[in-house]
Image 1 (tube, rainbow over the protein chains, first blue to last red):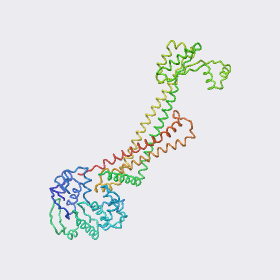
Image 2: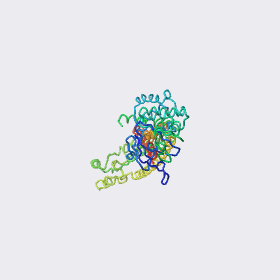
Image 3: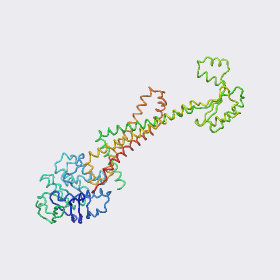
Image 4: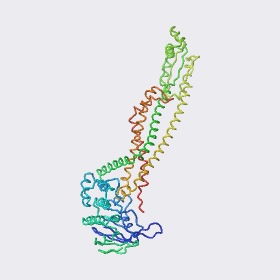
Amino acid sequence: MILLDRVTKVYGKNGAPSLDRVSLHVQPKEFVIVVGQSGAGKTTLLRLLTREERPTSGKIVVGGIDYDKLSDRDIPLLRRKIGTVFQDFKLLPNRTVYENVAFALELVGMGNREIRHTIPKVLDIVNLKGKERRMPMELSGGERQRVAIARAIVRQPKILIADEPTGNLDPKHAWDVIKVLERINRFGTTVLLTTHNQEIVNKLKRRVVTIQHGTIASDRAHADYKL
Amino acid sequence: MSRHTKIITLRRIIKAGTVNFGRNLSLAIAAMAVMVVTLTGVLLSVVAGAAFNHSISDLTSRIDISMYITDDASTTQVKNLVSALQDRDDVKSATYISKDEALAKASADDPDDESLQYFKMQGTSPLPASIRIQPVDPNNIQSIKSFLDEPQNAKLQDPSSGTSYSGTRKEAIDNITHATNLLVRIGIVAIVIFGFVSVLIIFNTIQMAIFNRRDELTIMRLLGASNSYIRGPFIVESALYGIIAAGISVLLIHSLFLLSSGALQASTLGLLDINYAATYFRSHFWVILLMQLGVGILIGAASSYVATKRYLKFKTK
């Protein structure tokens, strides 16, 4: 589902590599946690997957799409196929919960009637039923992140990339978000989660990929993680 | 993308553009004010140009040649000359005015002239008969002049009055035409300058709007919005500036003609016949409105297209 083959990313001409010959293979329906300290290269890895960055060298294939053959015109189409959740939520501030989630569907040209039919189901999955008309400002951090997750999954992507989605949340809300991600994974979506949170990693008991100084330091199933 | 999906997307882009227009009203007012000035300038130039042309063509049509006939000329000779003139390609019309008709017209034009009234009562006309010739092209009367100067025609001319070629009047009209052409050129330059300023201001307005909403646009791009989906609402928004500004400019000129209709009735400002300008505006109202809408939409859409183009380039490093 996700394949990185000796991917290197260097910023600037003579800078140290943020990622250095990283190879990673994620199977369909897998739940993979990427851990590492700040600056280790986790976010660079995800930005390469969403094509916000181009690798300096190496090959990336996601969902059968070879990034080497991807033109700039195709980037929006790629992003519509991948669900993305960000640490800072990235909700549209002037739109309601409903409108934020609907936006993802509007981009693919879905009709209003179908949108009205789809959104309640998704808001139910993330436990936000009844909050359709709220503005992002009126929600707690955990609720905002669940709106972002609803927006990411509403198009039923095969892959969900979550970049430290619990980073700005207290433990209770963080755990709510992780439970939603687990639930989505049970429905068959491949989840790639980056986090700092040791407790979450240890409780989830999933494959853990540790990145240190731009390289994969370890890649283990059910590993315990220590900062 | 299917046709149905395209229609849905287009509808959403138009709706988003309209909503954004409402949200950026303060910026929009500044942009529209400049556009109103530009479009009003365009409209005034069009109407004034039409009025000038009308006045010039009216004056030009009055340029004629009057050949005064000697009393010795026979009716047959005069009739032959008139029909010869009428057959010429460069003559629009040739009309014979008898001595009596000349006196009747002169006394009607100047009823206070006692001597004319006296001759009228006497039934004798001191004025010579004439042939009034209207040339097809007032700028090219040389060939008619040559024809009239031919000996068999020249001998019919009244020796004291000869032939009048409206020479001084033509010279004055030429000067006016020249001045009007100059005015029209100055008007075009002024419109181009206003148009350029207008584009610059709208360009900056849209750039400010983009700057204010840069986070929102980044989110849209990360979620997979295409360039046209992001750019579309901005183009709709600035096209709306153009539509509203066009409406205001047409309304302004319309109100101006309504207000001035009483005060300036049948008046002229030099060559600018206000009545004709108002009539022209009313009779061409829909064409003018369409033209204004077209120019307004073009200025708005083009400037916002350029403003968004640079920002929306995908810069994956």
